[in-house]
Length: 315
Image (cartoon, rainbow, N blue to C red):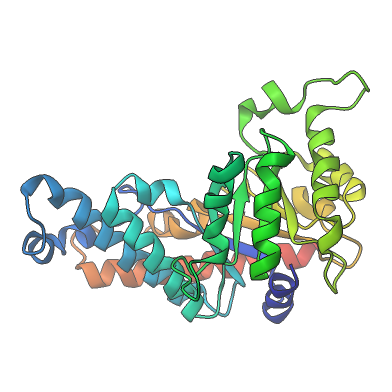
C-alpha cells in the first residue's frame, strides 16, 4: 500500500473516484455525437449501440480524469459497467485504466474476483501482466473471500510479485450484506469479524514501510461503528470505504475507519462525483456535446474538492 499512501499524502486527500459510467450518467448529446463515427467502424447495425456507448464512456471518463487529476490520488473503475457492452467495453476499460495511469493516478480495478486453483491464478495475472506486458495498467484489484484462503493466496502472491495491492470484501455497504456478514459463529464472532481476522493474517508477511500490508479490506461507510471496531481489530490493514455520498455515508461516518494519524483508509464516491452534473441546475438538453462534457468536468472537480474538504475537516 506504500504507493497509495504516498499518493494520498501528496494530494492530502484520502478519496477515490469510482469510474462507473452508465447510459444515464453520460449526457445524451455526448453519446449521440459519436453515432456517425461509430457507424463507419462497426460491421453490423447490431453492434452500433454498444460501440457508440463505449466511445462515449471513454470520452466521459477522460473528462472526469482530467478534472480530478491532482485533486484525488486514485480512481476505481468498476468493470461490470464496461463488460456490459461486450468487447468494445472491455477495450474501453483497459484504455481508461491506461489513461488514468498516464495522468499519475493510482488505479484500483473493482473486479471482485473469487475462485480457486488455476482459475484464481489466472484472474490474479491481471496484477502481474504477461511477461513484460501490463495490459490492464492497474495498481490493485478487489477480491471476494467467500472461497477462503485458496481464493486469496494467488492474489497475494501476484500482488507481491508485481508490487501491487488487493482489497478483500469484509463488511460491505449494501443493505442485504447482513444476511451473511452478521451471522453468529460458534465462537461468538460475527462472520465479518472472522473474515477480518483472516484478512489481517493474509497480509501479515507483506507489511510496508507505513505499517500497512498490501492486503486491504473493503468496509462500507454505512457501518460506522463496525468500521471503527474493525480499525482496532485490523491495525495493519488499509481500508477501502465505499458507500460515501449517494449511498448515505458521510465524512463523520468514516472518521473512525482512519487511524490516529488520519491514515489507514481511502473513501470512494462514484455517482456523487461523476454524476454531479445532473444536480448542478446548469445542464440543458440544448447543449452541444462539448459543452455538456465541460459541465461534467467542472461539476466533477467541484464535487471532488468538496469531498476532499469534508474529509479533511473530520480528520
